[in-house]
Length: 77
Image (cartoon, rainbow, N blue to C red; front, side, top):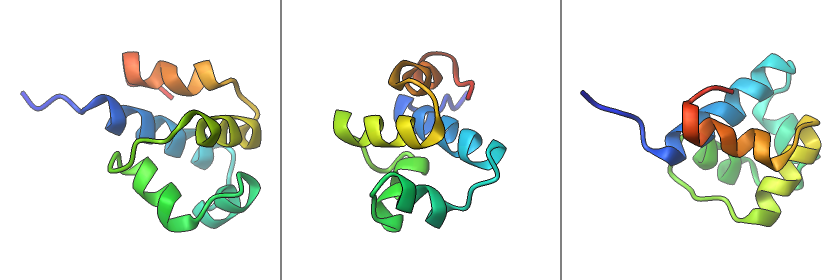
């Protein structure tokens, strides 16, 4: 059984929240003051975001950092 890594769960949760909000990758990157490539790598689980990045993403998505991190525990967005 191939269980997703915590970073893939985190990235998947961020992507799910972005898509649920109707945002494009470019729009969220802009709102969070991030590079599109960096955000794409985070969503794919290839990049480990630092706390400042998580804070920017959470603020842009209107959720807490804890809500984003919860996806690492249970895989839900």
